[in-house]
Image (tube, rainbow, N blue to C red):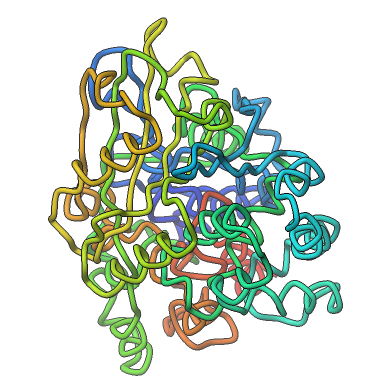
Length: 474
């Protein structure tokens, strides 16, 4: 008699946990997902955080990688209620002069808007736009020999450079500022090796797929993933916080959508001393301080382009943004933080009562910070949108401790599951040919603490599930 209650149990229902569960369930296995919270989703949750009728994305908000991911591309999520809308402009970057740089769906339009930096932008981004479909499965996975080695090498030659190095290809502050905003999504100093990678990918995917907004909130992505998983025969149990392996039903494989710190707390005694030491040495990056606002009117940006953008990067010049990221990573709270702002309700009317708006923003801060950055963030918004403070009806803030309390995977407010610098680009969470395996047979890690890292793309979970299939069910 089979002693296993399930073929696999997945602990955590974030996008990677659900991706792992779906991948295994599609192969005909029996899979159970366990979630500590009352609702599924991890970073994909939407709640009324300020006033009734104002629906805010608690963590992630804009989702270029949800449509740029090879895993998501193969799922029929629209059949389970998932819809996206697109702002006319994917992202905008205002300057003190009143003008703004833009990331448009059109590569040519974006390049043309950069004046004398047109050709430099095309030379940098156009090859990746053309090759992304081919190289995405390898670029968004563990280190291995790629299927398209020449195209992957061309991407890698730029991706492994620092964002600061790439910026020197541009002559204008406009192009440099746009590039800084894209690269700062990496949440690390722009002088770090490989800090250019995320800027390249987000720019290219923006031209290919746009930066879409899920109708109804980020929760709708999690709900569609869960509905599809259940339609395949999978099971989900919520309200079960796992603190010990003894709580988990007998299964051939257990996959943890958690970071190394939680994995050690749950299963430390099962691991070899060498593997434990690697998990203990795993490094987390900067945290974030987040604000959600309920507004009486749209954000009154001076630039018309910013009013048409789903995402707005507030930081002025490359130099100013680079300084902000350097200070935050060094334990200092910048006076002028780089602010990532999303105005979903301008394009998705399900987010707020008629005529009203929700706005989402965060800045990077030292890991574990409890400093209130509300005034600094609002000052940055007001700088580019005079009169913004007059539109505020209500707000909710979250410092790094509150963010970690909400989602234990966000250690010290780190939303990437660990810093994705050159040292942890492929060696997350350990130096291994298969980063999804632990030292204990049957126990795997599938969170953003594995390649390719943070973001709503499901590729960490997908690759972990592929490893499980190879090891145990081939």
